[in-house]
Every structure is written in C-alpha cells, then in structure tokens.
Image 1: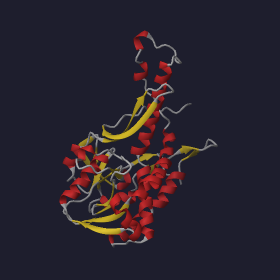
Image 2 (image 1 turned 135 degrees about the horizontal axis):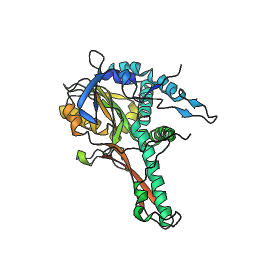
Image 3 (image 1 turned 45 degrees about the vertical axis):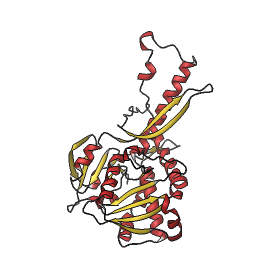
Image 4 (image 1 turned 90 degrees about the vertical axis):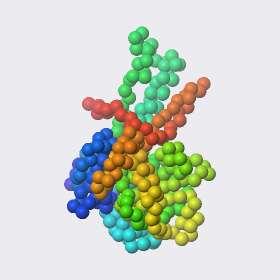
Length: 325
C-alpha cells in the first residue's frame, strides 16, 4: 500500500513529547504566538516527501519511506532500554543509527542542499556574464541575474541524505564520546523538526554556529530523546566512550537544561515541539533564526571559488520548482 504522508520526524519519536492525552504542542516559527495541539501523526510530514523517479521513469513513493519505517519501528524499545540504564553495544548502535538518519532526512538538510545548488548556478551565470559568454542584458535590466529566481528539482536533494549520513559516519561520530543524560530537574527538554545538533561550544552562545567543525576545536553534540533524556556527545568523552561504551549521567542543574532548550529552539528549522505551552517565550525569542546555508563567491582568474557555510539567520525562500511537462 502506497504511503502518501511521509514523516521527516517520526511519529514514534514525537510520541515521547506528548501530554497525557497523547497530544503534541506545536510552535511554528512563522507564527510563534499561536501554538496548537495535535497528534504526532499529523505533524512534521509532507506528502510524498521521499518520492523519486527511478531510472525506468517509474515514480517510486515507497522505497525510502519503507527503509525509514523499518528503522523507526525499533525506537520505542530503544527508549525503554535507555530509561532502564542500558549500556549495551546493540542499543548504542541502534541509537546512533537513528540519530544519523534523523539528522540527514529533515528539511533543514534538503533545503540547504537545494539552496546551495541554486546559489552555485547563480554564481556560474555571473561568471559567464563577466567572461562575455552571455548575451548582453537589456539596458534597463543590467541587474537581471540578481533578480532571476533559480529553482532546483527537489528530487535532487535526496542525494543530500546520503551525503549527510556519510559525513556523520566518517567525520562526526568518530571524534565524539557519548553519554545518556537523565534530566532530574523540573524543566523538560523540548525538541524540533531538526533535533540533531552539533557545534563548537563557545562560552558566548551568540558565537555558536550550526554544524561548525574546526580541527582541534572542542565539539558538542545534542539530541533530545524525550523530555527527560538527551544524548550528549563531546570530544572530551571520546576515550571513555571507546573504552567503556555508552554511560549514563544525571542532570540536576536548571541552567544546563535551559541552555539545551535555547539551542534546540535555535536549531529548529520550522517548528518546535513540546508537551505544553511552557516554552512559548523561548520559541518567540528564536522565531526569526534557523540553521541556514549561505554561500560566498570569490572571483579567481580560473573561475570563481564558492565557499558554503551554515549560520543562524532567517530561512531563505526556495524558488518553486515546476515539473517539466
């Protein structure tokens, strides 16, 4: 049976953040003052989000969704085992596999890929213009390349899922040691539509950039699992993790939970999810920022060099893709 509704944040994951009635409080960054309650089955989804056209021109709407569903099905058991203090290699493997997939499959990743490709096309067009390879622009439209909208086939960004997974497995996970932290404070963790985060933990939070990695610099990894559990990764715990595996710790410091929630709200792309409306002020504070891809072109004699980086800023609007007839 074909599944039309493709969740980019699994229902199984979101259920842990619901209230006693099984409802989730959703804060949209576009309308942070009007949260609403809904079922996890009705949020963080898009119709045919993982559909693609195969080489034989057949539209495949199920392959990705089935792979993701198979991995998601084990999530409740993973959480139950973590709550009990499980440190086995099996649960660690399944947990990190889920975290990698959850980082890779979200709109924050796919939109960034499409925006970067659109930027690249624009940079190339400007280079060709400087080289005299394009027809002269009309006299009243000299800035036409600055105004043209470049749309990218959204199916192309499915490649970003594989690229992001490879990057996590090859460059992120090997540098870190992980712990499960049990939240014993009166404040719950929130989560978002982009819940897997890593960054350089500058003392001044305003200096933190999304997904920044610098050789030799410290790094912190956060992934809220439930309102009472969070996965923490740091470079300083890497040796301990290799020797002893996944350990558990207890968190009683309110400020540490508040810091985590601030970061979760900043890393959120379109939405923050919570048990209730208590994080309302927090979401409003960070409603105008999300992790967004930006590119800069540096002219060179042999062609432009394009540098891409992530920063917290307002989300960029993608040009609408119109499927060729």
